[in-house]
Length: 336
Ligand code: ASP
Image 1: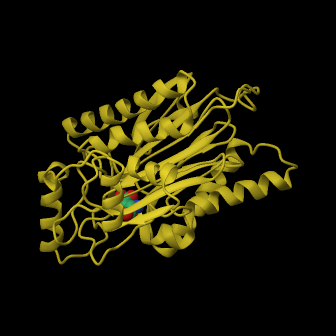
Image 2 (image 1 turned 60 degrees about the vertical axis):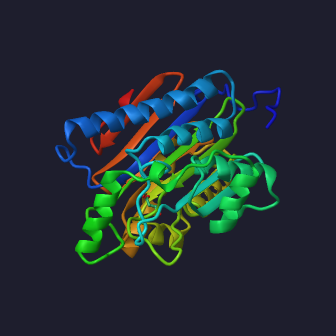
């Protein structure tokens, strides 16, 4: 993607030159639940991911490259449910989903049920950049990955002992696919670049014990992932079956656009964007689903909303960066 020479809205007053927001999933993350080592590793994984995206955005790179690079770091980190460390299907296999979208032309790419691509987010990007399609699935997506020459990895590379243990536990307890401990480890990144463009990326192994070719919200454009320069960019995590039915990511963007239009095109104040995100998540809750979202608005606000006790998350801008896990950890503008 070639950057335009002008910096359209980037340097308007009060707006950060660029912004990056990430999540590494949400769940029953109460203080004291994680052992110190796991917590430290998760925080440093989030830091590394922010550093990768920051490096791109700070030197004038675009939001799309930044969210892809950020998601790749989280995919490579076995602590999160994406790429290496993905959860296992009922049969004990790895089947990964990913989606990427850019808000300038509404370009999008998505893959479902990928088994051998080391970084599924880059396969989603290849679908967007090089194929005439938006969404490739299972064997066909694997084939396209090889055709594009993307790095392949064996199932052994992706599987970790912790994920095998979780599947064994789930089967022992009766095979209920929705995590009874409420732990969702999907990863996501959203960014606004200095040219005023936004992008979103989401990558996941899905839910432990999933079967029958189950597809969650993460790779579905408009459900788990959406980006539109007119509103902002969103990535979700949580019980996908509920997010799918609300079309969460697009719903939030659409409501932001409607409100902006009603206000004569003015940017939405941060508090109003937060209220929209919270109310869409409340609808998910009304159906019985828990989860969270990250949002960067077109004016560069970094917003988080989640209905679980915690969410692995972080944000970066020229003002610095913060990572957080628990609901009461300050992050983003709240940390300033
Ligand atoms: N949303 C993902 C799915 O339903 C799971 C997650 O967020 O961890 O596949």
